[in-house]
Length: 113
Image: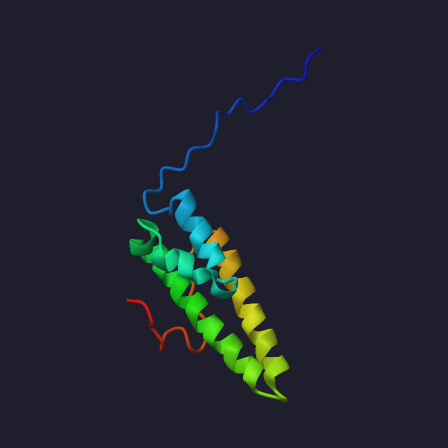
């Protein structure tokens, strides 16, 4: 006797028109990895997507914060851990198709509008 699928449900289709395209999601995730935020900033048509702009803005802020952390001699390691945690939170939210704002400073700093 063959194993039959009891649920017999077809493929799940997401009809959410606000969900980002595959490339937008990839660029949003890459924006949290070092200087790769440049990809989402420069490549058409994703550079005009508000979802990508949100994550690229966060990536730029975290990149600048990472450079500042490298300059600070004693507390730089603590600052670097905070930047890493915020980057991981951003990657997780980008992978789940969510807009994300960096806690504490994300509302106050908008580099890309």
